[in-house]
Amino acid sequence: MTVKEHYDNHLGHFYSWMTGDFHTKTNEFKSLLTDNFIRPTSNKIAIDLGAGHGLQSIPLAEVGFQVLAIDFNQQLLDELKVNSKDLDVTVINDDIKNVETFADKPELIICCGDTLSHLDNKIEIKTFISNIVKSLDKNGKLILSFRDYSTKLTGIDRFIPVKSDDNKILTCILDYEDEFVNVTDLLHERTDNVWKQKVSTYKKVRLLTNEIVEHLEANGMTIKFNQIINRLTTILASKE
Image (cartoon, rainbow, N blue to C red):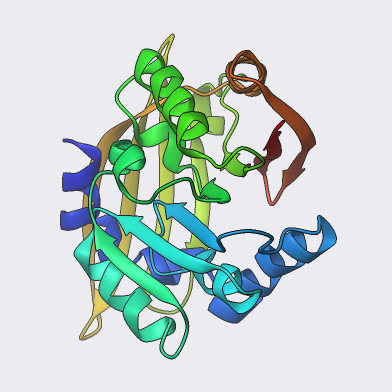
C-alpha cells in the first residue's frame, strides 16, 4: 500500500486524535519558532510540506507568515481549513515533491512530523532536500522533524503503544529492513459496544539523522539547531 493510500483509507480518519490535543501541540511548535527567533523578515512566505490538519501551519500564521499548506490527504486539509479560519493560510492538495512550484523564493520551508520518511527512497530524499534549498530565498530557513530509525527494534520492542482511550486503541508495529521500515498501524475501535480491528501497513524510509545533516550541509545549509523534541529529530538550518 502506498503512503497516500494508507492515509486516505486508514490513518487520515484518526490522525488528529492520534496526535493529541491540538492547542497543546500548536503551542509547542509556536514556542520552537519564538525561541529560535523564526519570524517573517522579507516576503513573509512560508511553505508547510505535509501540513496535515495544521499543527505547524497555524503557529506559522500566528507569528505573521503567509502560509502555503501542502498535503495529499483531503480529509486533513479540510480540518486545516476549519482550524485556520481567519488566518493567512492557503490550503493546497498536492505532492510535496513539487516544492519548487508552490512559491517564488519563500523565506521559510518546513517539513515536520516524519513526513520526510514518506518519500519513496533515500535517493529521492536527497533530491528533495536539494530542491528545497534551491527553492528558498537567499537567506531562507528550513525546519525538518523526523524519526531517527538508526536503532533497529526487534522482538516485542517492535510493538509501540501509541494512544488509547475508552473507544480507541492504537498500536504501531515496526519491521525493519536495511533502508526501509514497514509500519503497521493496528487500530481497535469500539462502536455500539463492539470492538472492531482495522489494520493497514505501509513503508517508510529508514531515516538517519547524520545522513540528513550531510545532505543539508552538502547543499550549503548551516545547521543552527539539532535536538530531539517529542522523540523526533528536529533540525533548523539556514541558507547562508
